[in-house]
Image: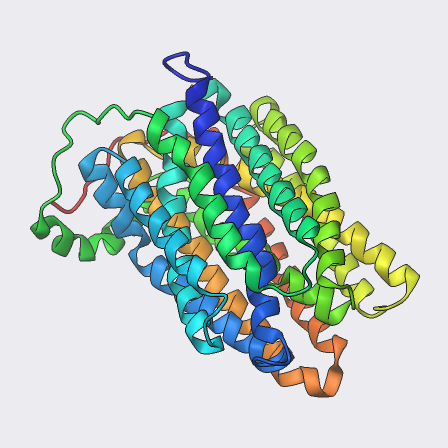
Length: 425
């Protein structure tokens, strides 16, 4: 799978997916929302709004600088030093959230989530360095599958602890992230790209104009800009559900924190198998056809989720909720597998970091819009509609998902890559 033939290289790369999924599952999807919406802190409606704002601010700031961060790594010809910096900046604030006051904890989470999102730019871009073109779909699927093992691992630990409080989760997750992220920095070695040079302060300042140049460059690549706009809309649903899933399960459906972790554990087992299957389908049928199938399954899952919320506390409602979760969980791995391979397929190698920065920007921009919209719907309508506010918020995601499908439909994943485009010096 890897150019130098060493199995430990793709293994170390995939293990980083294990590490950062611990943060995503334990902090973003579980602890932070429950921590802020607890009655002793900010309560259900205000806590959801503050959490949505924290996510939106962290992701929004990251979206603004993503193309610059990616372009700087292109100039340096390396990704790993940037990945290390933002990994550390994720771990340290996360460890400090538990004993902090609510608003201080929200601020610490904002910093940690900003860094976590920034690190993904460099991690995704290293896929081309640790894999062969013919095996990128498979390795991408393995990475996502191994990442879901991280969800199983941390969920088992938290279930064994038996606590119904989210406070201990923050320190535990930070330590585990540090341990399992270490191998990629100790084992993977980058070959600097020819023509790479050290970054100067002048380049940092001139890179502030990089966004418009990157967008102009993307317009020159057939199908790339339309793909990115489509990604803006379908990522809205994907990223929003990742953030709010624990609050929906515990506050809306009535499950306990431990029950939610057990549900998350069971659904993750399904997601692991499906991630490997989606990766194989990418290599066999291409990223576009695979991605369209994944998004269609998400539409079905979201509709079932809306229906289940209207029957919270009943056996039928719980069964529909679990079925919706299984569909969405299996599709989540497919989105991650297919769309980053789609992005690599469309992008020139010399500008991979630059375009992955733009790729990150549209995903994060959609999360800003999605989180603010979701948080406002719950905040404004919860007192009058109860669970109906959650139904309305989730239903809004179905619309954006369908629009994303419509935009991506004409884009070919067999478009020939154009020549290298210009950059700001």
